[in-house]
Length: 311
Image (cartoon, rainbow, N blue to C red):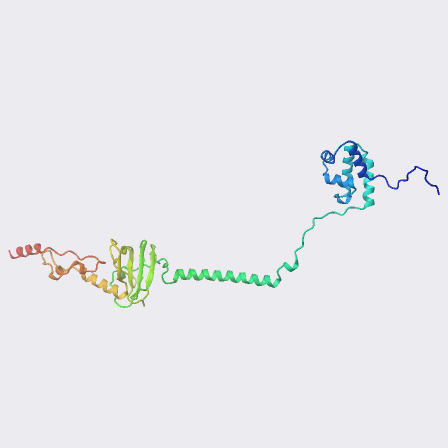
């Protein structure tokens, strides 16, 4: 065996690349931040190279590239340092790729399948109930008592029927708005059957079984009253609202009959003397909702005609 000569040192491994680069940098009085600025290599990677921590670098290829740039900046042999870097990386082992850890959801915190099914069923039931409630509300609003009536359907009525006097007794009474009009319909117990503002074309059918129904209306001239399909004269001229007006079939038939009797004029010539009964009937006794009768001839004119006849 040959012993080494005194003063001679046996070197098993060459000097590490990181130490060689650090010594060269310090010899030139440069900081690691200046090397990072010149090489455009992140300072943390340069620190890993000087410390020999190649496992913190992205890959061996990046490590060799960074060492080459570092060596050129400090004036070292980049080829020799690159070869030495490959050897060190191979001796240490290929660095394992680093992944950002993430937390996996705890299975105990995830709701069970049964709970999910129950929650879905409850949500579906709520939706169905909401739809049913909305539908019932619309049905009540369109058909319930006190709701706005549906638009009127125009039905042609023959002229003979329209002019005929409705018969007394049970019948079908319909209130139709020709323009915007406020209306209240109530029975003998003061129970409101309809209350609201009707629009043009809206109609309301008075219940046949209502007990002594009456109406209050703001513009009676905008309200058409029909009995069994026959149109009746307006209930008023519209100069003022009317109230407590009976609208049962019997009351309307009697009203029409009374109006027809009041408006019938005697068949007499110009010289006829007016009937004392007609002149004695006050105008207020006639129904205000129908046309006034024809004015009677003045008494003076009748007397003059009688004198001429005697002469």
